[in-house]
Image (cartoon, rainbow, N blue to C red; front, top):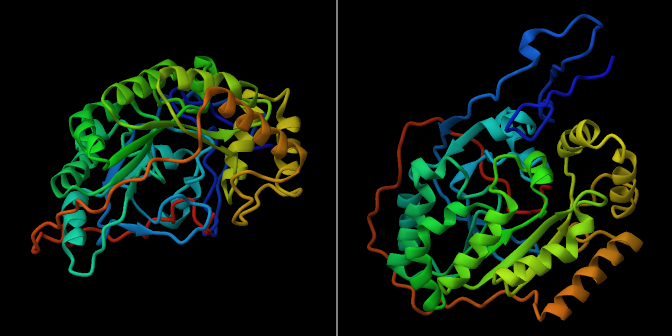
Length: 373
């Protein structure tokens, strides 16, 4: 019997596989009997639990990452992007990288206070900090919780450099902080655009803003004086790969002046989550997509080696790289991101409260695009 894939309105994953650390696994199977009414499930509610982090600045030493320090106010992401490389991190919490990842969220309610305490430490040395490198810092729950806003207020007050990556139009709320910081060389942004097709976007990243809205966000960031680029990530053969040139053209027209791309990576449980999604939404091309992805990963589902994991190897990887490079040359866009200033940093006063005590301790953040995956 084959496991049943269930499409839930407003959710990306069609499966909820057990994490790799679990001893037992449960799955729905077709036993020949009529499906229960519960199989036509309404969209499951999003549950947000507290994350009692004791520190919030995460360091990485990955040589193919453009930053050394990052902050992620949330674990899990309600956007529901089926391709998200961060999904396997939920296995450390005893949860599924499938549906759980987009419905069982964890919020670092004390993130701003913890950040300020770390910046005030005598041994702290200023360097740019990236926001939203694992999960989107402006996902829907941010509208109410305003945790990312709190971090930006700390950065603005201390004149600390910050970069951000998001696919959410919610970042426009914070232009009053980002605009002045950018004018002082303290901020830049990357906006992820994976497709211009709203129908594809609805199943690929169901709770993220529509493609046209993300282009509008690029324009509004640029109009506010924030240097902005576009992240075409991930590139999925035969799914959004045909749109490479169109996406770069549209982003440039909206105001993006630099760009990057990543070929789809499938670490750990993400293989099962993504393959189930492909089989449900694109059964006609599933075999071709999987074959091309494996071609770019040396015959495997995932190649975690530094230097290769973002771009892949072989003819298909070379073709994607050449197409991106050719379009960037035509548009006059580059890959180099702006250099942020560190000489304006004004450390906060020491003695900031160290966050809430007594909450349930959860696992540390996975490294941002780090060797773990």
